[in-house]
Image (cartoon, rainbow over all chains, first blue to last red; front, side, top):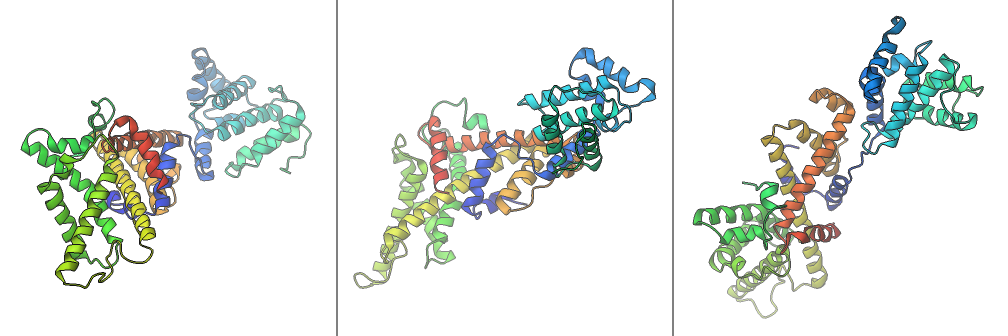
Amino acid sequence: MNDPQHSILDTPPAGIRSLLDDAAAEDRLWSPNDLQDVFAHQWSAPLALDLGGLDDAFASRVEMLASSKHLLLRSFGDLLTHDRPPLPLLKLAKEFAKRCLNSPHSVIPHDVARVLYFASIAAALSGCQRRISTLDDERLAAGLRWAMAREWLAPEARDVLRSGLEALGFNGEVS
Amino acid sequence: MMPTANQAGAGAQPTRWSLVARVHEGSDEARMEALGELLQRYLPVLHWYLGRHPGLDAHRREDLVQGFVASKILEQSILERADRSRGRFRTFLLNAFQNYIRDEVRRASAARRTPPGGPPLPLEDADGAAEDHNSLDRQFHQAWISQVVAMAVKGVEEECNRNDRADVWTIFQRRLLEPMLEGARPVPYGDLVKALKLDSPSQAANLLITAKRMFSRHLHAVVSETVSDPAQADAELEELKKCL
């Protein structure tokens, strides 16, 4: 579009209408490709940056947990796919996702936050054999299946969710 | 030069058709500049409107538009005599332009010594004239809002240039303008993050929101200049959208 001013006059009315309507809408309309990009970014985002930002007191704790025992958990992906992830970090990751879900000003789309939320729970179930959610099995399984069904989900994230589902005793397939 | 949002919109004294008012205020130089700006903005709509009339070639259309400017706006100063406290500038301009075209077509017909009820006039005498007339009026208002949008887009571009915000302008173009106006596929946020060296797709999405707010501000400012009271800008915008 080299000269928008000249082309706009010849734009069909429906195009102008769409522009005005969409410009007035401040909500983010995320396409599957957008969500894939955002999720990939969040999956590789530094843990210390997001989790440490939850609370000042958490920052040093996150750093300590992430680097303890030579785990070198640099990112959400590192944490959620680790064989034996530190439970406190998984709780912080779940808390981070929950806050994103509850905030209208969240920088992360709600669907991405919801997947991180269930992935944190799944990683605790399969990696630590611990439950960090008060949801009952059926509701938890429904949430894990919902997350697994996201078309934009990375395969390694889907594996984490599947492991959590199997740890609950459910078939790991999305029905 | 395009006025800034602050000059044209919020914070300004309540004015009536403020864009038109500037044509009659200040020094000769300032008035001529204001008139030039006004014509630059709205002559494309008049050209576009005439282009929808059958039987008028490009030269004739150009003559009619230039004649309207010379005769009505410059010589007869219709903008100065208009009752700006009532109605909308676009309605006033459309009526004045239609009257001028009608008179000109009749004058031309008379000059050719055509018999009474002679050849169909481009603007009215054909069958179904009322329907055509309404359709043309609607198209005029559609062209008007398109031009308003074009000016708001120009305002966004200029503000981005002024403030060195190529990132905002690029995202506005790639994610909103081109998809909505040209049917282009929105460029994925991931591509924009790489191209603009952003931190994350979320940052790209936030920049789009910034661009949308900037666009809305400019849109409001442009519309405010053409209504009798800036407070009517929202209503005017809603009215214009009904034409789309």
